[in-house]
Every structure is written in structure tokens, then in C-alpha cells.
Length: 185
Image (cartoon, rainbow, N blue to C red; front, side, top):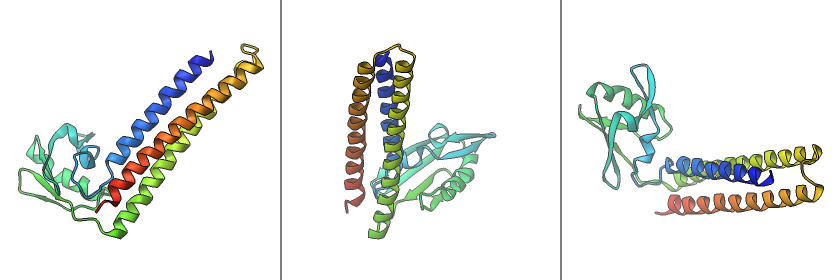
């Protein structure tokens, strides 16, 4: 029973790390990457649809993102979506494609981005701690129902704490890597 709780908790913690990494990939670091715009959505025949499903996204050089919609009538709505996003980029189009030029990051903008990164890291830590809390609650419920002994409860809680520490450390590693990337000039 405790093993099932541990497996479930570990799977949920892995997915929290994956979500964090995907989230941080969308934070601009001065280098062009498709991840900046892939998750933006556009109204496609009444359905909010990610850019990646309605356009080819390429990186012709280190400071440019090129978005080629599969249908030319999608250019205007895609431009509006980019302008409404928090990317801070101004799209330019030639009737067939949208170009996004990434300006160099100022020191102030880098610091602002680090605040966003730190908020996302803290959200991930909280998510992992919530998973631990749920696991401990399940273990305590098993002990109350006399399905496990008090010793097994203590061991299970200790194992869950070690797992939590391991994943919180992983969040910190991801954060250090992103900080290095953002602060790199």
C-alpha cells in the first residue's frame, strides 16, 4: 500500500518537474526558440488552438522566429495573439509569414525575467509539497484504518520526505540552469 502511494507521488512529482521545464522554456532568454510561441493560442474556427498546430515555426537565425501559418487568413489573428501575450515582441508580417525579432535583453529585463523564473520555481516547490501532503494524509488514513502499523506509517512518511527532498533539489537545479541562461549576456 505504501509502495503504491510512493509510486503515485513520484509520478506526480515527475510531471510537476516536466510542467516546470515546459513553463521555463517559454521564458525568453535573448535567444530565439520555438518554445516561446508554440503554446500561444489563436482562434482557429472557433477553437483556441496552439500555434504549433496551425503553423510551421522555425528559427532562421539566433534572434529571429519565423511563423508560417498553414492558412494565410490566420496571419492577423496570430499577430493579435502575439501582441496580447506577455512576450513583449512586435510581430511583422509580409502577407505569408510572421517574423519576430528578439531584441537584446537589458539588465533590468533580465532581473524581471528572474523574478518570473523564481515565481515559477516556487510554484513547482509548492506543488511537490502538496503531493507530499496528500501522500502523508493517505498513509495516516491507512494507519487509522489499521491497514498498516504505526512503524510502517513512520517509515512511509520518511520515504515520502526523502522523495520530496529529491524533487525539490531537482527544481533548484532546473532553476540554476535557467538563471544561468537568462543572465548570460
